Amino acid sequence: MKKRKVKGIARDTLHFILEASRSSQPNEFAGLLSVQEDIISDVLILPGTENSRMSALVRLYMLPNMSVAGSAHSHPSGDLRPSEPDIIFFSRTGDYHLIVGPPFDERSWVCYDGAGKRRDLAVLDVDFRDDGFDDAFDDELNDDSERGLGDGP
Ligand code: ZN
Image (cartoon, rainbow, N blue to C red; front, top):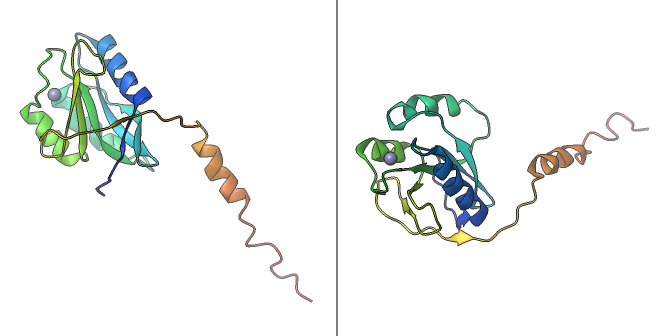
């Protein structure tokens, strides 16, 4: 997988992860983080628990256009250290891995790298317009390279 440098995580995305983790209690919440314009801005929810996560991942990588920077999951116990399965998972899933726990506020999370070492991750206030798909579509419509072919005198 390609390594990807990110500037930080969007505050809305962090709040989504914290909220989803809170409402998943007592179960664990897990998701993959994807990147838009170098900022972690989307969460793809992964079904299953720590031990079944790898098989869910294999299916997700069949999806086209996945740009995964890392993962996020909750430890309802409040112990934010990665478990051994976590570290194996981290090493295969990118460079930014959040573990969140109670009380699920802006301070109750830690970011790890692919080796399970703590790393800094900035929380950014960004406002993404939700029209990435439309932009791509417009680019295609504006491609007029075929115009005029075969129309010469
Ligand atoms: Zn874990």
